[in-house]
Amino acid sequence: MIVEALTASYFETNCWVIAPQANSECLIVDPGIVAPSMVGQISQFLKKYNLKPVATLVTHGHLDHTFSVQPLCDGYGIPAYIHESDRRLLTDPFKALQQGGMSDQIMRELGVSTFSEPAQVISFTDRAQLSLAGFALDIAHTPGHTAGSAIFTVDDTYLISGDVLFAGAIGRTDMPTGSSAAMKKSLVEKILPLEDHLIVLPGHGPQTTMGRERKSNPYLQDRFLSSPSKQGE
Image: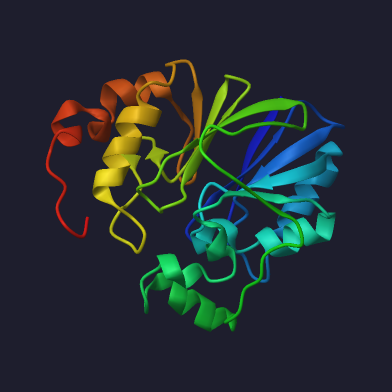
């Protein structure tokens, strides 16, 4: 099996490429911000293993995870899958970003002011199931980081967690459409019930496992989960 993180130059976002083996179909997850896009970097990797992409999975609509979605999908003629609550962010990502923030500054530096979604976009809802590139995918809606954040369980082996769960941390909840209360609910109802053996592929940082995070991640402990959520968190 091939599971590789291609790192975007801005925000060090993990763009995961997942395939059963070389010379097969593959999935691409969260192609982020590279000037002019991540297409060249991804294409080089695909050629190395003779992989054919069949879909781009988007864990949420923040720009550091979606910047290269449109050129990648349209270049390969493949669809993008995104939760229905975050689909609007493909064309207007600043609805979930702080005005004047780092992403805004980067777009100004790159001279990018308009965005468009790919020709093929498939929006999903909670508990959707997909079969792509030979993998069985179970999708859970996990709002908190954004309104449409989602996680993907792949063949009951890997968890694509986006910015919901990191090694030792969770995603921030203080940006537009984020919610500390919603994040805690997602952690309790969607993350903690997952099996310990799952290998976690986060949106940033190293791989981890559910078992390790259940034991050591401070944000998965009762002290945090039962604490009151402050306005603006």
